[in-house]
Image (cartoon, rainbow, N blue to C red; front, side, top):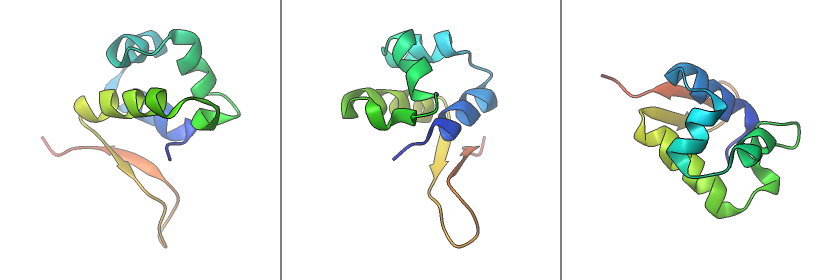
Length: 79
């Protein structure tokens, strides 16, 4: 599951604002703001979380799962 920090970091890597992500994902701006808030995307519908993840991945973001070397993260796909 995506975390609020991963969403914010992904936007930062892409240079996207919250409104940019809302437009790119088709999810409302208030929902994006909530997903990046303290409670994270866990309170959002699975469809909204999926739309946000697909939009960010489509723009070149890779989501990394937590493993023995660290927590969840993001990076850009190789050019």
